[in-house]
Length: 183
Image 1 (cartoon, one colour):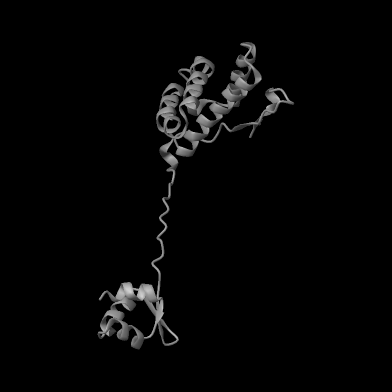
Image 2 (cartoon, rainbow, N blue to C red; image 1 turned 180 degrees about the vertical axis):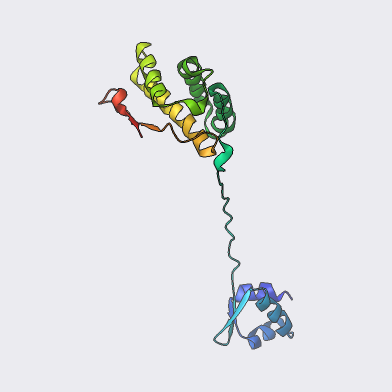
């Protein structure tokens, strides 16, 4: 008889009780289970100890000297392949591709992502405004650019020197340069 399964089923028991149920001498098997930590002996009772689910946490440490120059177009390709296509719906990926292709790449192509600064963000905003883009499209363009920059900052590939936040747009307010917070 499998003493461990019996102990698991009973939860709490004495040596006499388990020997009576199992109809054998269980002392050596109980000692083995005690040594393995599957049983504890408290107040003259053996108690089955449920195996704790081991939680495994991955720790991602970003090396300090990993800063790498990466061009905007290469960063976009990597972002789309390793983030957007994995975590976003098809329609979202289509929208991201469109925003990158028409609103970001024409003005930042050839630049290194780690060289983009707050003035470049303001310039992209001004270009979007001069092109007559709707407020929501301008906001989405800057929010996606922010997401791209933060993605590579979190990977440790670029420094955290360009940080900005695009405030949420509601129907009551129009998008303007004041809706961008530079940190």
